Image (cartoon, rainbow, N blue to C red; front, side, top):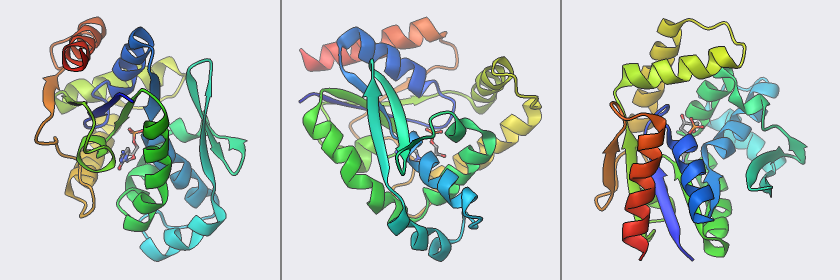
Length: 221
Ligand code: DC
């Protein structure tokens, strides 16, 4: 199977770029952040402190997370309930970042990610795909962009969905998440040694998609 790992900070365009590249190449697209988000949402619903390792770990036995692919589109099931929309709120983002720093949560989600990659040609995006989950992936890309650019993209997305957020709050959240994600002890966000770094600060979406698709094609022929 061909496995492509795309890692990078929040808002670099990973999911949009990976989804489009997967459609062009006929691979499935796997958004692993959705798994951490589902665990985060469950912890929030239970009233747990999402930074509290013991509280969150105690919940894992009650959680089943599954990914389903409907017409190429990924849906996330939390105890059989489709939570694909609920996991996209700013609260869920922060909860996901918090629970993702807990080693037991990472271990809990590891096999699921590995199994999908074993059975499918896929582009998987996340933070530790090239470094930890799929260290043997044929292609590894680290997609990044300046924080202000990433925050502006996220802000535009949230506004388009009808949220009434402030740009400065989005930027602040993003900087906090970047810090959390790259400073945690387990599987911190960092480029794999053998990854190609793509900075999308000055690329529009179409250019980013073309660049990534081209890298994948070159490395898989
Ligand atoms: O990609 P995303 O914004 O949906 O991810 C949500 C959070 O999950 C992010 O802050 C860090 C965490 N995450 C992770 O630790 N490892 C991954 N492979 C994917 C996401």
